Length: 208
Ligand code: SF4
Ligand code: SF4
Image 1 (cartoon, rainbow, N blue to C red):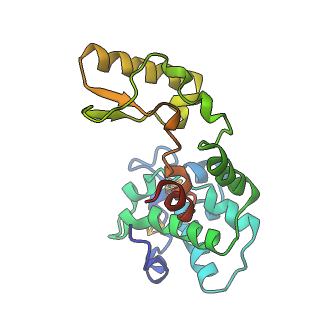
Image 2: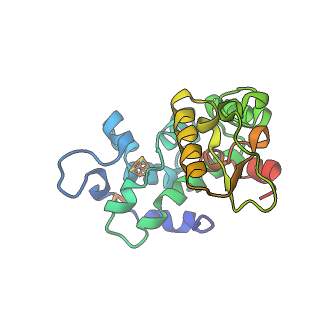
């Protein structure tokens, strides 16, 4: 990730707005801009707000944090931005979130998400002992298995995602693939935590 120097690069966005739209201009490209229809919620608006915050021109506020957190990290903007820095845009937004988290500037909803993952191993606050309930009879991973099947929090707890996980297990078993699952030892992968700007929790829990 190109996070380290983002503060010295973010001004390169000149808010042309190309990233707001798909190539044929038929719709809106950035989902948060589509939802809120204010420039602050578009990629360029968000980057300029971050730049102003880094320069001390605006104070942190829950509204500012909300604007940063309404970015879904979909990377549609990276596809449409014509500038060389395009692949780094989402990393910059995540880096700004990390700066907020490091300063203790965490909106309550984000904070509750972190606490849930830390306490329960999943953001849904569901019991660890129920994690593998979807997988009755599926083999637990053991040394010598060729693959580890990790299904994630939704695959473990969400009714529809569980169906997909079971289907995948059926396909793998039918194909004779050597694999196992982690069962109740599986935990949140940490991706959402990282994208929300918390870098310490993944390193504490998963020793990254
Ligand atoms: S991110 Fe790229 S496309 Fe979007 S406003 Fe900035 S320079 Fe323009
Ligand atoms: S990554 Fe964020 S800023 Fe870029 S298009 Fe998606 S929601 Fe908008």
